[in-house]
Length: 143
Image 1 (spheres, rainbow, N blue to C red):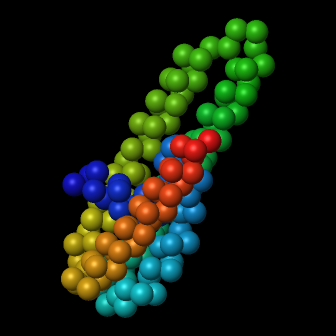
Image 2 (tube, helix red, strand yellow):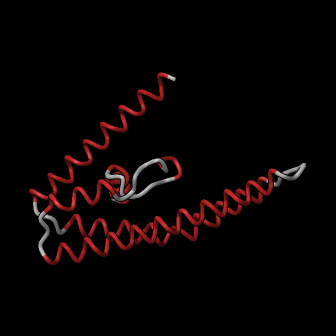
């Protein structure tokens, strides 16, 4: 189930990962929101999901900057300590995990509270995003 929600979030461009950091995290989410016609309970779950995603995204970007700057400093040395960088990466990843888990929990709660029509809209958005990924992947394979 955890993998499913990650696919949903990544497919919609809601969150980014180290491998997919080029995605626009919230633009597709905002566009989808207007189509869902949420009831008040769903809207409150939506806002909670959005807040947790933003917090996760901000923390992830901050952590990536820390690792990036640490790597730049190490590369200035004659003998860089890449073990230090990997330890820093592992540490920041572990610290980020609770925020990631909260986003997943909020996303599943939101999705579970949608009606069948709203779930179809989500499904279609995921299909469209996956088609974009396939297109991008094919373009990258050509190079």
